[in-house]
Image 1 (cartoon, rainbow, N blue to C red):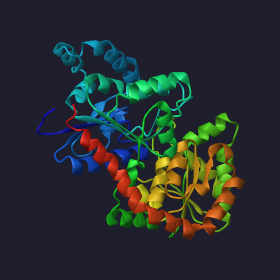
Image 2 (image 1 turned 90 degrees about the vertical axis):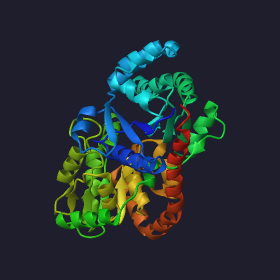
Image 3 (image 1 turned 90 degrees about the horizontal axis):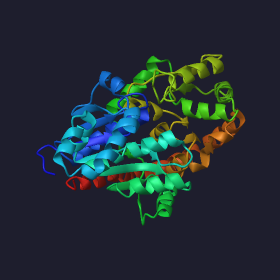
Length: 410
C-alpha cells in the first residue's frame, strides 16, 4: 500500500480513564512518529465520548469503536463480508462506517490490549478479544499485537479461537516467559518476548520538577510511600469474601503509625462506577486510614506526571500493572499486589518478583511483613533494577521497531 502519509491505527487503549492505557497510547504515538516520519494516527476508541472531550494529541484522530458495537455489529459484519472482500462494492459499503474506513486507510493496526485470550475470563471478554482483531484481518490490514500477557489456552473454546485469530496477526509479542510458553503450547515456534511498551516512555526533567512542585504544594515531604490501589483488585477480593478496603486501610494506618508519609495516587481516573475508578476507592481508604494527617491523596492528570511522582517514592505499593511499571522504570522498589501472571512476568525481568503477592494472599499483616522486608533490602533491589533498566528500555522500544517493519505489507 503506497501513501505519502502513512496511517497507523491504534487499538486497545483510550485517551481517558486508565492511565496505563494512556501511557501506552502516548508511548506508541511518540515511538511510531520517530520511526515512521509523517505518520498520522487513528485511535480506535472504546470510549469515544470521553476521548473526544479530552485534550487531543497532535495527529491523532479519535474513531468510535465502542465495545458493544465491535462485538454486536462490526464483528458480525466482518464475518458476513469476508468471502466477498474482493468486490470493491463490498469494501466501499463497509467504509461508510468510520471504523471500517479507518481500518481501510491504515497501513497497520498497533494493538495495545495488554492482556488477551486468557482462559476463564468469560465469553464477553473473549468476544471482545476477537472483535478487536477480526475486522482488521478481514480488511487485510496487518495487526501488530505488541507486548501483552497471553494465555493460558487450556480451555478448548479459547484455544481454538485464539489460534484462529493469532495466526492471522502479523506480529505477536509476549510480555514475559509465561506468555511465551503459552504461545509455544498453542503451536507458535520461538515467539518473540519483549517488555511492556511503557518502559520506553520518556520522562523529562520538566516532568520531575513538576512532580516535586506538586508534592510540595500538597504538603508532602520528600521520599513518601506512594500507593496505587485498584478497584479491580477490590472487586476480586469482594467476590472471594476478602474485605480489601478494611485490610488495606489497616495497612496504611500501620505505615502512618510507623512514621511514613503515605501518598495515595490513583492510577485509573474514570469518574463512573466502573472498575477503572480508583479515585473513589482512594478517598474511602484515606478516610478510613488517616488519623493524624499522614495519609495524603493526590491526582495527577498525565501519565508522565504520575510516573515522575512515583519516581520520588522511597517505596511503591501498587495493584495497577502500569503503576508498578512506573515504579520499576524509575528505580523505585515495589511491593506488588497483582491479579494476573502479567505482574510476575514483568517483575521477574527486573529481579523484583521477590516482593510480589497474589491478591488472594493479601492482608494487612502480610503486606506489612513484605513492606518491612522490602525496606531492609531497598538499596540492593534498587541497584538491581537500575542495572537492568537500560536493556529493558531498549527492548521495550524494540516493540515499535518490529511494528514499523510491518508497514508496507498491506
